[in-house]
Length: 222
Image (tube, rainbow, N blue to C red; front, side, top):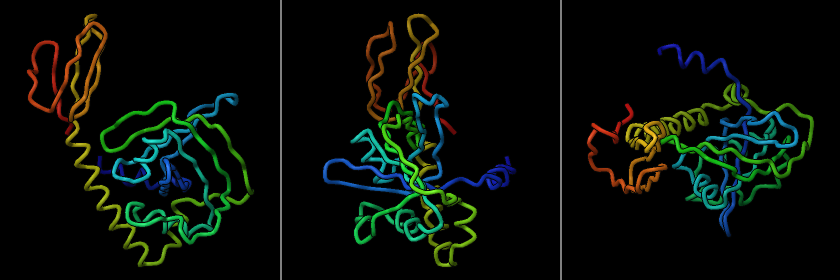
């Protein structure tokens, strides 16, 4: 387990600006959890992971849509603006010129998965354009060019996020409800949630203790 940070440092992920809008609200954040989710040319799909504490997550949940914008090294100011500040306290777009990304993709959420600390979205690409042929900005390039004060802000922000996300992961409760066939299961997270696996009446779980014996069991992830 001690090699995990060294393994992850071998990866050099592209940096994306993920934006979303709902009504008169708009938001955006910097993300590296962006991947191709289909190799079928007629059905392009993208996969992203967005942590739940972000304002952008709220707007993706509300609109069920997001836009991916691939950045290059000319967008360092955009990275600091959208990566180090919260959209709950300021309009990150205000005062900025129109963005000219390397490429952009508009996506409609097809499905999502709650993993406790974040939501994984699979989005159908509804429109896309390659704007220019410049190399995309990567995390290693960003870290090599970041001034000391930006590095301090980045480290402090990552520490705060890690503490919050750790709490969400460790507080997640999985409730497994065995179906009538004895094989199928439905998963519920902590809090009020209705589960209705086939062959089993609806049950409302409110976070209380559940008998671990028999057909129902609650397990806290550690």
